[in-house]
Length: 423
Length: 136
Image (cartoon, rainbow over all chains, first blue to last red; front, side, top):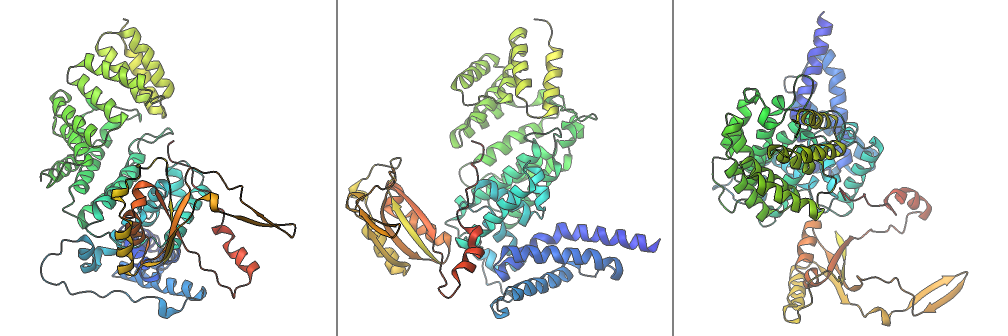
């Protein structure tokens, strides 16, 4: 049936163009209208219209241009309806002269490259430190990632109305407080880039290990974070921490297929079938780390190097745990946290130093800083098992099971507990 | 965009070091840049007066004022390109280090607009609660 085929081709084209063009169209409209709501509404309208019209008229030769034109007209309509003078709506920038020499200030590079400037502006504004952290992540997913409010609400386990309100408030603050829509200057960049990377990391973490619920992997959020990190690297290729973040995300994502078995159960790193790791992603991640950082080593670089040590090991036994311990030591110095201490202790244990590892974990437990964190109990249980202290191990497994937030993690710990030899 | 910059004390800030109080340089800089509209120190609350009209009656008293560990010690009105410029200027004020600074965007009032219509239009922008803290 031609009609059916046309419909399916049209909807495929809309879905593909949505992924490719949403951010660019919204970003361009925000720049020209100065209004985030108008920009989103107009872009969403244009895609809806495309879904209806392309079935009948066929997919236009340049879908992106078609959508941009329609969205721009929609934005003008909305602004006219609101009584804004059309003359106030700024014209599209037409900058084509790239003056000699390579500009080193990102703000200058962006001014010179209209192709991708708007998307980078958008990423920086969404991650502005004057916005609440939760709103930064949500706004990034909405505006840069093109997820709708319901999808974001679902990803963060909050009611849709709560998420809608959070987005409305963030956009209102951008307008009322005049949070700028631009890439920070070179002087501001180090601080501000950190904020952008932190937002991408949060988007990714939400996808890597769902904080609650029964489904362990939320690949869509992980892929979204990778796509956005790729964008930042493309725009700021010399920012080592951005490259490192992308490497970190790729190296973790590469293990997705091996992390869960056919029944959806969790498979720990040392038991994973490494032939199921995505070799292309591992390769890309490792290659991103090839170039040594020009300045001091940052926290994303260190985390990425830890994942790279896993990525390079063909079997679990080949893992260079000493190198991993060194990375955690450095990480503890630049960005201390109880979770880093926990992971370093585990690395000590896997490097063969179980007594030292257990002593460190006891100290961490006594400090109370990880109270209620299931992975502390799980790490103690595992190390006690390796040390042959089966009764104590069983007790800690039971604590960990009680505290585990997701079904697959609980069941994994239950299996470990059941496998304990009588001690 | 105009911002009211409240300069406040903060018990958790670094102790004040008079030799490092670069307020004169700060003022010279903001004036040279043309972003400074107005600014003053404020006398402490002991010198303040409270004025209220209740049930048509004028009440003038020397308090009570809301007790707070952070009290406003001065203010500056800034006229900046955007929030980033205001943040950059605020960050170099000596009290960003020895106290705390609050940047509040000004909210222009259209005197021609009917107050009831305005209240309806702006109700959503007023008295909104903050997002709950993350994690905690």
